[in-house]
Amino acid sequence: MKTLIPFAHRRNPDASIDSICTTCFQTIASADSVDKLITHEEHHSCDPYWQSFGAASRQLVSDNRLESRGKAHPCR
Image 1 (cartoon, rainbow, N blue to C red):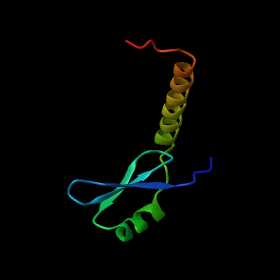
Image 2: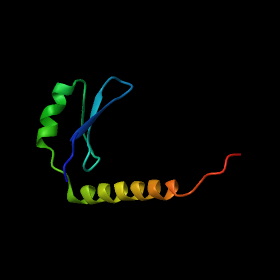
Image 3: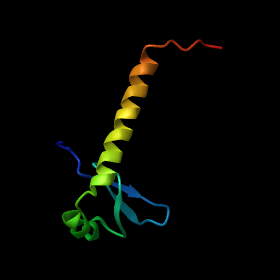
């Protein structure tokens, strides 16, 4: 599976930055700068359990979106 963005970065209220793997959705590391996250990202390898769990949850979200497109929701 190809991933265009291997890690997503999220800024926290305390100004730290989380690095999140977009394949297995695990938080890889948290640091005060993106430069400090690079080493952690380079050494990350997805746990097969989380990789399959992530794929299953993505499929569930996709299925739910397709199902909801086919149903009209009445306005109240």
